[in-house]
Length: 280
Ligand SMILES: NC(=O)c1ccc[n+]([C@@H]2O[C@H](COP(=O)([O-])OP(=O)(O)OC[C@H]3O[C@@H](n4cnc5c(N)ncnc54)[C@H](OP(=O)(O)O)[C@@H]3O)[C@@H](O)[C@H]2O)c1
Image (cartoon, rainbow, N blue to C red; front, side, top):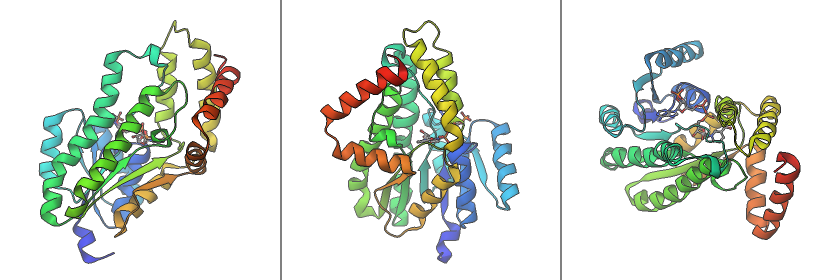
């Protein structure tokens, strides 16, 4: 840790639970001035409690990332050296079941907002001679499976945008990093179950019930979000961070299979699994 690290502000969105909460605490522990955004005072208290229990201080700011004016105000207030675009949510459902409004909300939160926040933060990063933008993507930014198409579409978009941005800002000393977790035990999985439970009358009903059961059974073997937080901290502290960090065995295996298996073979396997596992 160099003396300047202690003054470096890192702004993390969606800081009151899961990966975001683990990240703001981990970054404070590593000596950053860690600021987390939340959507209510009660959620800010949750962050303060977690930080207090870890013996660190985390500042909070109220922000719904889909509110462009609020994004500008928060970035102007903190002028972050580092930005961790973490806010996101589950969009679980067949593409036939998801209307434009639901899709738009996903795109606004997980695609438009991260790029907007980066755009807003870049002038002060350029002035400071450098900075870091860490975008929390997913193994679903590289692979696809049925029944989460819009979520995967958002993460695929974030991957492409991050790669373009990395090239655009490299000469300014700003590093753009993608963190691609596999499955980690957070609130997003309960959201996924609530999503499918709410899709009453869908022709995919039986598949949703099987998916919900699979999700419930998988949660105990998933890793802790603190694993992802440590990778985010590593990307922020490294002078030469990688462009991508896959986190978890499932993510690493999925990425290799995605690269080496031809699409035609993947389609056959997915078709078989979809019929047998989801009953479609
Ligand atoms: N958990 C995994 O297995 C996994 C795997 C790959 C990628 N990820 C990604 O990791 C990130 C964090 O998810 P998580 O798993 O930690 O889930 P989580 O525990 O549900 O946390 C999601 C966070 O995002 C916030 N958020 C959602 N919409 C927002 C909005 N419009 N404005 C501001 N904040 C908003 C939530 O705030 P509220 O409490 O106010 O809703 C919450 O703080 C997401 O981008 C997700 O796609 C997760």
